[in-house]
Image (cartoon, rainbow, N blue to C red; front, side, top):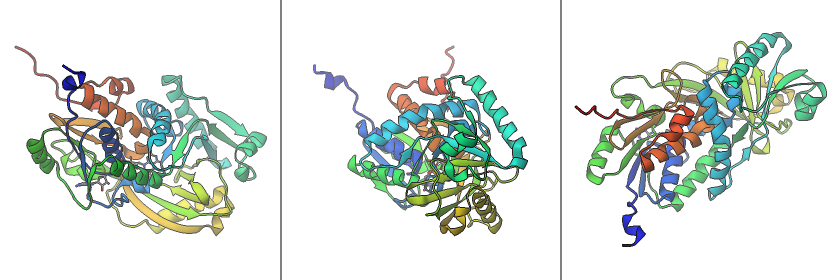
Length: 377
Ligand SMILES: Cc1cc2nc3c(=O)[nH]c(=O)nc-3n(C[C@H](O)[C@H](O)[C@H](O)COP(=O)(O)OP(=O)(O)OC[C@H]3O[C@@H](n4cnc5c(N)ncnc54)[C@H](O)[C@@H]3O)c2cc1C
């Protein structure tokens, strides 16, 4: 007997949704020998995905103010994994890991105090997190000369990263094609249709439809919701920022994520609705005036795009993997942290598919809801 005869043949996989999670999973499973098919309601550019609109900041410490410690831990796990994953892609993806700068206007010092308190609580739960640095004067000017005249102090969060979401979607598409993955665009698919496919072909079904899975998550119950985010993409040749910058504000906190060639993503609103209509005047004014307050060079910027998408969000605002039937996984609730945590979710799902275990999910406290074994009488 040769060893290859005892190695199980990788099972076929049908993935619903070619946004962030669907592309990552499809690529990695194909690399590991699975025949993979992906169906997406939209186009190869990801025109119906949250992933196409996102700022793609990888900022676990900055997010500590708005999320739970387990999401922060997933974000920390993901940062080195992104480097490994990006190095394997057939096309380059802009990736930067120079930290995040948190700023506030003098009158909003209370917001800074609140932010520091939340960060401190998360660091108590996760002592291995990098240490934030209070910066002022010369140190602030050294880090980010362009803002040092307007702001006198800030908090620097080392090690945080960001990537170019659109280059990533494109590079993942190239990787999927290279691996021979069957790609079906403009092809909406329901969980029911996927189960029919499984009944015919066997193998796994992975539901990565983000908000498109709303009718099916969990079974039954309409608990998956959208949280609308509006973002502006600007070309601002007069502005140079080294790293994502966040402005704390009691009503409209914003971030400015610098991409290559003086392109900036300014975002994002957080509105409890599934409404995908174009950005409102109010939101646009708030985003742009806050950006202008950080750097007057934005006054001469050109507006490239105004975009709206909804973040797929579960009731507790946390990600989850749910197994409604054998070899069927629903992966959802990535909310505003999809880029930040997806390598952790990817590795946890692949571990489950290959080993039937949830070691990483348990370690990172990723909710992984598989049916309990029936008690033996
Ligand atoms: C404004 C905004 C800013 C963001 N900024 C950040 C950030 O800075 N950092 C960060 O980590 N995260 C950010 N996010 C969150 C991140 O984009 C999401 O968490 C992530 O994209 C979710 O990935 P997903 O694969 O679950 O869903 P998506 O990326 O939305 O992909 C879902 C896919 O399913 C497809 N689909 C839907 N219905 C069907 C159907 N019936 N059949 C087949 N296919 C279907 C869609 O076409 C889409 O391609 C942001 C999101 C928004 C909206």
